[in-house]
Length: 168
Image (tube, rainbow, N blue to C red; front, side):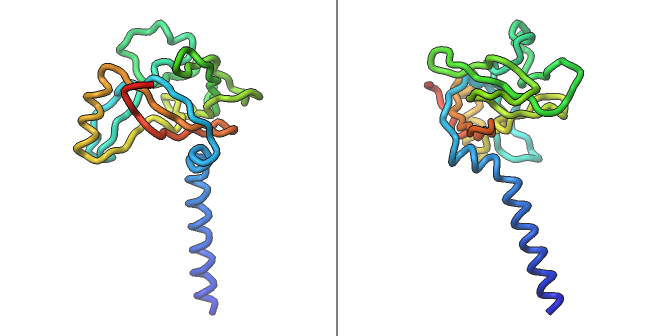
């Protein structure tokens, strides 16, 4: 009986951990509002991670990096000597959303992306688009001229990448 109880407790703990791990993506997909942002390809297929396209979001970079050369990629970092949560507020610019402000404090107004800069680059959870092997290379070719991503963002700033397409 003790062994069965131990197995049940371990199974329940594992289910809870899986739920916690996917909660932000599920929340964004189920409760979030759709926004369109510009994307560009960043990285080719990685043999260790499988077929995917790494995406760059040129309109979401911090204000001090807007004038950088086209060689810079990724969202960059908030150069304030700190690391941790970063919140990127969004504003409408034509058919797409662009970064308005990069903040360390959670904004009271939405929409915003809740990101993290514990590593060398800011991560918002929308950096990779996974596809079947044959479609990933074709998608990367299509993205070279620029494309648009549909993201869903919930009220807590959790974002999920829903679609990548040629038109906004």
